[in-house]
Amino acid sequence: MYSDSILSFSALQPAGPKAGSAAAAQGQETAPAPAGAGAHEQPASPAPSLGMAFLLPLLILVPFFLLSSRRQKKEQAERGKLKRGDKVVSNAGLVGELVEMDDKIAKVKLAPGITVQMLANTVGPLTTDDAAPSKSKDALADLKDAKTGDKSSAPAK
Image (cartoon, rainbow, N blue to C red; front, side, top):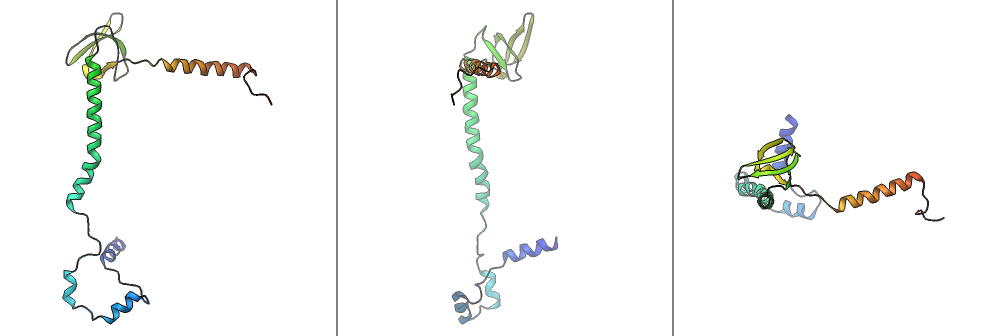
């Protein structure tokens, strides 16, 4: 603790030129300043202003707010396009068929005879990628070829 206070105090002291340098020689030729004159000097490196301390977090947070509002608008537009009978997924991962939806509540049929009510803003359209199954089929075919030892597709030595 004592060493921390010494370090912080020494960090505030202005550093003079090194002994033997040209700047040190010039400093010796000039007359020393009076004892009270040092109190009016400006610090060597100015501290950041209080306004800058408030500005920096704003510059960081504003893009996040803009991106999140854009995403919310997109999700709301997708929710507006939903109609009865569409496949939907909730934020919790429940998949079902949309039965009814108003501004706040969505009724979703999960299985025959099981209908649940969810908050409408937690429901979105279920999207299925058509490209993903073809990639997995190719990967499965390659895996089967590797297991059977089919060397027809392997390069010749």
